Length: 169
Image (tube, rainbow, N blue to C red; front, side):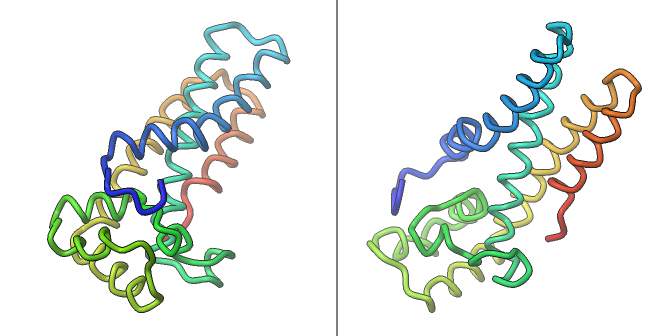
């Protein structure tokens, strides 16, 4: 999807659902099945994993726009530099398509253009809308975690989820 001009929230969500969210879902689901949990509980854990994975990836994509190499422990704006347009960009693009047109027509992005795009994304509410979306998935995950049977593992899962998806922007 490098430098793809086919930008949609639906496609983005489908991509991260089949990637990051699937990894989290499978991890929780397989752990439940292998430990002999009932089918209903395993399915709930699948859903928790899905929502944690979705929120995690959205937050990771937001951090590309608001973090720096040191704060996020990796190269900031790496996806953008590679021409991969994530949810903050997509939301901002739909807010003002003309502002982003020249960047979508390019087959590479310079470091100065990366800075320009980051500012445009922020100005066009892309970061805030992405944070709101991550919060929706976070709320779903915690709602399902609250429904789990009371035991020490529920608290371990809650603590892990908090660490993964309540990162500071």
